[in-house]
Structure formats: C-alpha cells, structure tokens
Length: 100
Image (tube, rainbow, N blue to C red; front, side):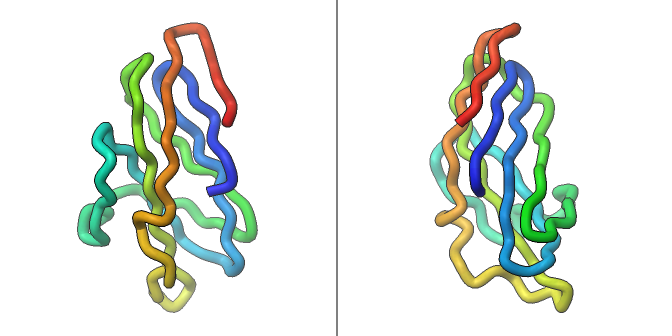
C-alpha cells in the first residue's frame, strides 16, 4: 500500500503493483494478519500500477489494521507475506478526515 485516506465510516487504500493484479483487502480491529483463505468472498479490484480499494461500514474513531493480497493474471499469489501489507488506519470522528 502506498497510503490511505480515512473518513469516519470508511478507508480508501491506495495500492501499487509492479504487474497487473487483482487485489482484495480487509480491515481488522486486532493486529493479526489474516490467512489467504480469509479473503475468500472479499470483493476485488483490478490494479495496473496503482489503484484504490475502499472499505465501507467502519465505526468512527476506531483503530483498524488493513491487509491486502494480490494475484496476477495467472492466479499466482503475491510473493510477499500478507502481514507485510499491514497498514494501521484510524477512522476520525464524524465530519473529520485524515490522510496518511
């Protein structure tokens, strides 16, 4: 992840990939990297160099940890670990927004 934007009820993750990839992301309130199977059923976005992934339905003024997994056009999962994608995100109070 390159950066993120946090609003009171969602985060937008700014992603990068060296190859065209399908990326799925999730947030958790506890700092514990998910495993690949946890991403089953999670919506994906296509990333060609850069892209964005929005996660809605979050609680305001809450700490979250975002994790992503990417697959190339051949279905090969990224070589780096899911834990290495960890980004901490803090949603602000309603009406406030933060960029990191």
